[in-house]
Amino acid sequence: MLAINTDYIDSDGNPEPRLRQIAEAGFSQVHWCHHFGSDYVYTEEEIAQIARWLRSYELTVNDLHASSGEKNHYYSDDEDIRLAGVELVRNRIYMANRLGTDVVVLHLPRQPDGADKNLAFWEAVHRSTDELIPYARERSVRIAFENLNPSNHSTLEEILATYSPSEVGICYDPGHGNIDGGGLDFAVAVQDRLIAFHLNDNDSSADQHNLIFSGGVDWNRLAGIIAASAYDKEYMTIEIVLPKDPENIYAGDEAGFLSQALESGLRFHKMVADAKLDS
Image (cartoon, rainbow, N blue to C red; front, side, top):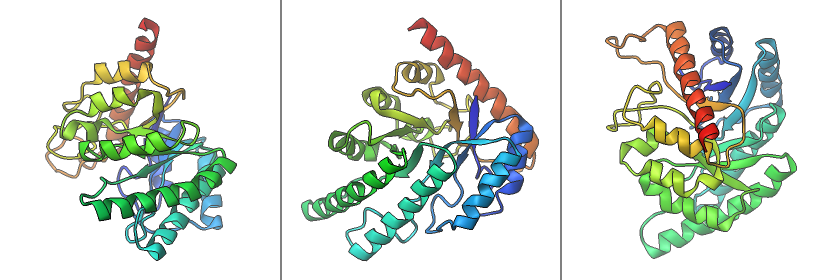
C-alpha cells in the first residue's frame, strides 16, 4: 500500500540495486525520482530496461518526478532554454506512460518580483503548460505541481486557477510545508486538487526528508486532510533520504532504514483510512 522514492540513496546511480532493496523491504510500488533535478533524458532502451527491472521485482510505479531541469527550464524566458525544458518534461511524461503511471510531479518556482520579470515568467509558464497538457492528455497523464515552501503558494494558486483538475493538480510535500509553517493550511485550501504526496518529516529548520513521525509535521491533521481530499489512489508515496550522519541510527543501515520507512508509512496509511471512516 506504499510507494517509496527510488533515489533514497542517490539520484544518478544505478537504480537496480535500489529496486531490489525496495522489493525485499516489502514495498509494492515506487516513486521514480532518479535524475529529478538534472537535464538527463531517458532513452527508449533505458525505459525498457527499467520496465524489465520493475517486472522482475514485482514493483509498479505510483508516480514519477519530472525534472524542471538543471539548465533547461520549462519556465525560462529564454526561448531556447524553455523549449529544451519542455522536451525534458515531455520525456518524463512519455516515461510515466510507458511505466504505467498517470501522474508526473513537477517543480514550479516562486514567481519573480517586478512587473516585467513576472510577466515574462508567466508567459513562459503558460506557453509551456499549454504545450505539455495535450501531450500529457494523449498519454492519460496529469501534471502535479509541488509545493516547495510558502513562497510558491501564490504561484501554485495561479496555475490551479488557469487549468482544470483534469489537467493539473498539486503534489503536497509535508516536509516542505513544515519548514516555514502554513503548509497544512495551504493543503486544506487546495485539497480538491491534491493528486500526489511526498511524505516525509523534518525539524522545520531544513528540507531533511526524514522518516514519517520523526519531526514536527502534524500527521494527525494531514491524515484528515488526505481523507477529505481528491486523492483517490490506494497507494501513497514516501520520499525520504538515508541518513549520512554517522550518529544517526540508520546511517549505513539500508535494510533497517527501509524497514522503518515501511512500518511508519503503514501506520500513517491506517491513520488516513481511519480518518475516512470517521468522516
